[in-house]
Amino acid sequence: MKAILIGVGGVGTVIARILAKTGKFEHIVLADVGDKHINELARGLGSGFSARLVDASSVDNLMEAVEGIDLVINATLP
Image: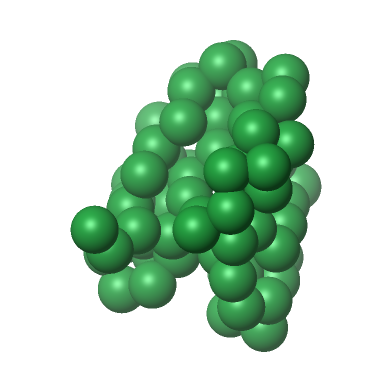
């Protein structure tokens, strides 16, 4: 199963670490508007993770990001 976690701030980082421990995902994309933190986190969590810049306020950007994804986890601010 492929998942994308949108919003990788404080709460999203905790969610990413929990997901890493489950072993239930083939691949998890960490998506956020800023790249430094998500790149470091993805590398630290292992080969099943990647980082992607996504602007959650852009419908087009979101639609492109979730293509081919089975599960979307939203950890962005409302």
